[in-house]
Image (cartoon, rainbow, N blue to C red; front, side, top):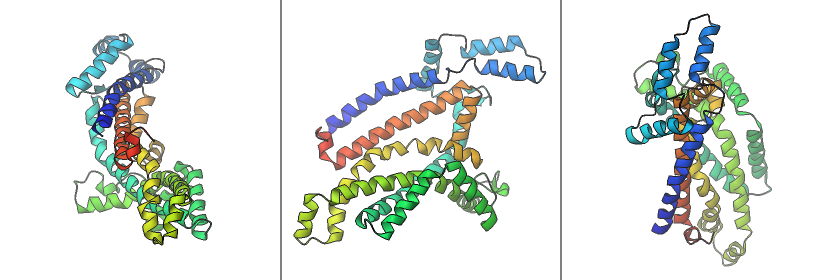
Length: 330
């Protein structure tokens, strides 16, 4: 097991280096840069441009330097000083902008993850055990609808229902009176009242997908000879299902569980835009639109790192529950 862990960790380091290069390269693909965009905006608005100031900014951030020089400055400051750079658009440190939105982003991501797992796993197991019954057909039908409905449309519908039926303020994660209020019981309760809409919307597609995977894996296991043999020996149905098929059917779920880690950070950008959520997703979209390279690069890098770490966690969990993985037989 320790050899397996060591090999996986060693694979992570070069992967992170390559990902950081790709992330920095991608955000520089659009023509021009933030300063050029800012100059065009000022000139379109009829404002004068201080060329000396623009040249100083180019020199400060190395915008005119080759790609490798800019990348070395960027990644060096992150690794050695924890400095993700300055956001050109907001004129604030990138770390400050991310930290301001991180608590609500994590609250939304964790709540969505709990909602997804709490519904998808029992529903998938029940649907497999009760195959070709009304319960199975109902769960499958709801799952297909959840996969087919666009998330932005579901967000609009639920926001309208929340306003019409519960007189809830639409948009954001707080009522207007609690937006700038200090944290307390009232603000926390108000957050819970607003949180259910994005949690349901973001969790719908993920829940439906996990239900389908769990159901398929369970059906595959329930038809294997060892299950038939266990039934013939008189093992109770409940113990038979929980002891063997469920444990084995969980392998694909465990192997992808770590992929949900990045979603705790960035959330669903489209849903966050529609519902005006103060999470990191819309901040990333705004940074990409304005070519705010340090802000966009910092967020993309963190998401990529979380993806790699999540995959590592999934591999380790899968190796812990299934010995075939660490011995290279699965």
